[in-house]
Image (cartoon, rainbow, N blue to C red; front, side):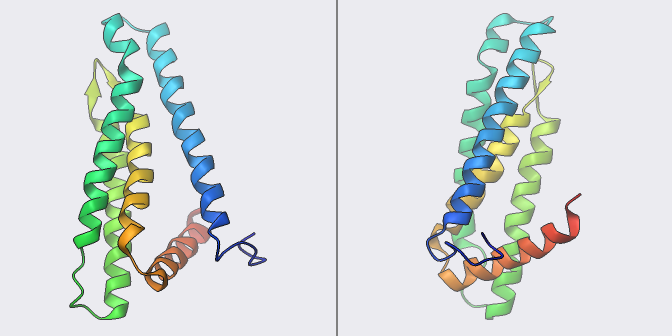
Amino acid sequence: LREKVVGINQGITSLIVAAANIDVVIAISFFSLFLGLIFSDGSLFLDIFRAPIELSIGIVYGVLFGLLLWLLPTKHHTSNSIVRNRFFFLFGFGLLSLLGAQKVRIGGASLAGAGALGVLCVSFVGVQKWILDEKKMVSRVFYLLWQFAQP
């Protein structure tokens, strides 16, 4: 759709990507929940409530750092530096969420679902106050990065 420029202005491609990613986050959360239940040697209570804990941590992280993206960078920068800085902040907060959740352990299990959900929430909340041109330019930088980094 992106290459054919169909539905770009209505945000259809972004909606499809977000829906697919939310599905992946839910799958990761429940997979880790059931894997933890099967191979657990710890508390059953903690294993059962790990998925809601992951979802809560991911949403709280995403909202807090997304709100921080409303303030960073300030409007005193040039247009190019705002786009560059917003890209690096968004990329950095997402990377911090994803990798940080791997290091945090609850009952011996990582919070992989919380990290992935944190990435989605940071990007969703963070871009709400950006103007359309900034969203498009940052999206273009991520698109080019993805073209380079995809397997």
